[in-house]
Length: 114
Image (cartoon, rainbow, N blue to C red; front, side, top):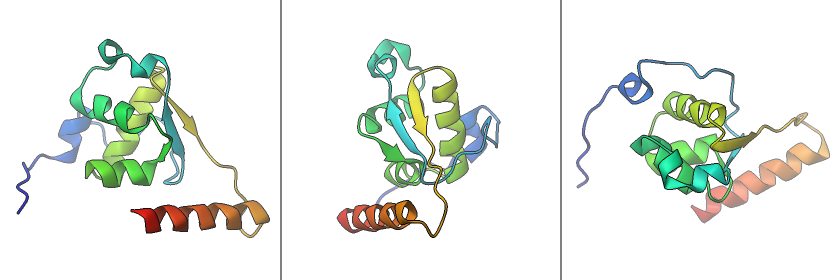
């Protein structure tokens, strides 16, 4: 059985409950060269996100891998983006077009691999 320390979500984000800008669940996050330098990244959660996003990951994946609430991840990722430690790749999909079907297929395949 896994034990978990109970901590209020806003305690991980310095009291903030919303990111600086809206992030889609499927937005991909990748670590910049600067974010790969351990001394540049302060905070345990920020460091974990930078390590995880050495390969591009979606906001939803980050939340699942780190077992954190989505809004907490959104705040942390926006902080990292503002500091130049990650890049955020938001999709401009229009649902119903070919690219959105391809995207949904990639999401489905990614979920099957988990």
